[in-house]
Amino acid sequence: SHYSQAKFRISAPDISHLGEDKGIEVAFAGRSNAGKSSALNTLTRQKSLARTSKTPGRTQLINVFELDENRRLIDLPGYGYAKVPMAVKEKWQKSLGEYLQKRESLKGIIVLMDIRHPFKDSDQDLIHWAVNAQIPVLALLTKADKLKSGNRKNQLLKVREAALAFCGDVTVDVFSSLTNIGLENLQIKLDSWFGY
Ligand code: GTP
Ligand code: MG
Image 1: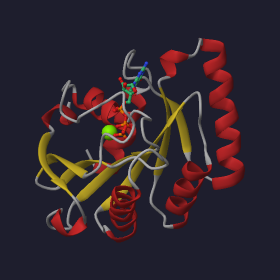
Image 2: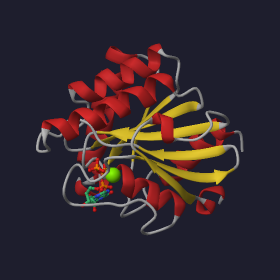
Image 3: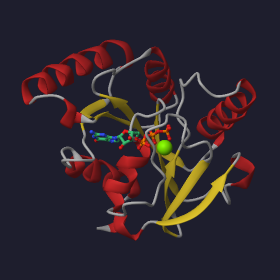
């Protein structure tokens, strides 16, 4: 697939280091430890393209993976993690906010949420903001392998209802980097955003 072509391009401390703001970027966003970097590795079929960790707060820079000259996947720092020094946190949350608000080539956001703790205030804020900014969103309930099929379906229905009520028209799906559930739907959505 197109996504296995992804190559690491740069880790940027802020948007001034990102390179030219042209073409199409899709960003993976979500709370710390939600599984953003793991999902990128699953999508690209490259085990260690994006750095993953048991310790929340692993991704502190804006990581750019290039598919081709005009298409990029972005691994964003997580939000909502308290256990880092305030100065560090402020810096990276600032670059995250700047990226979301200023990057013209941002054409879609994958919002990842742990299926066991979905739709926290910070997730709602992000999804709400994206819908208002008219940036398409796909919300993924990650680590779906952690729940039995019945619970998984219940949780998906609950989050879909809540998203409809609070944020309007966003697609919500389940995902697992272990079982690849949801991978096909993720690719279909990305294909449409990237114009493949
Ligand atoms: P930050 O960069 O810290 O914001 O985290 P992240 O959102 O990039 O999460 P990361 O991909 O590093 O994963 C965090 C932890 O969750 C790691 O221990 C992963 O192995 C685990 N994990 C990620 N995806 C899955 C999944 O689908 N299933 C299971 N069981 N564990 C997962
Ligand atoms: Mg990460």
